[in-house]
Amino acid sequence: MAHFSCFPGALALSAFRQQRLLAALQQIDADIESVHGQFVHFVDSDTPLSAEDQTRIGAMLTYGAPFTAQTEGDRFVVIPRFGTISPWASKATDIAHNCGLTHVHRIERGIEITVICKKG
Image (tube, rainbow, N blue to C red; front, side):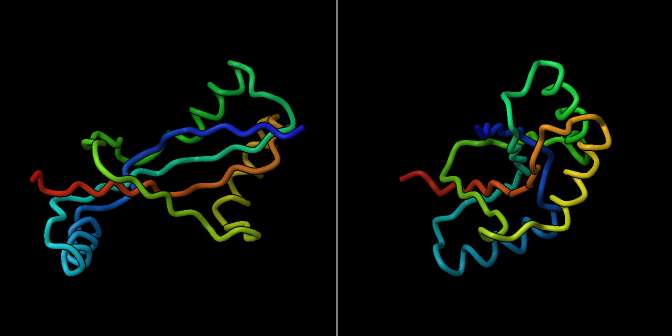
């Protein structure tokens, strides 16, 4: 039976990319005040992850600048299209297997985009 776990990650958008995305979104809706991006990691495994597994995977997925932005707003998750295994997922899954986590089928990364609109 498959088990699915989700691990929040680091900041996904540099200041430059964040400003570029905000400008593009404001062309669509001027009420958009800010936008933030955070990596999210999805783990597919044969069995539920033990506390030790969660700690090991959490350590593996700790990289980059920490995400500390406001998270109130509308959220959208961007992931590779279904049926596709990203190069990032292939490498992350290989690393997990090399760390003894052979019951992990796949680790995939997505980006959770939070859009905050002006009040009113």
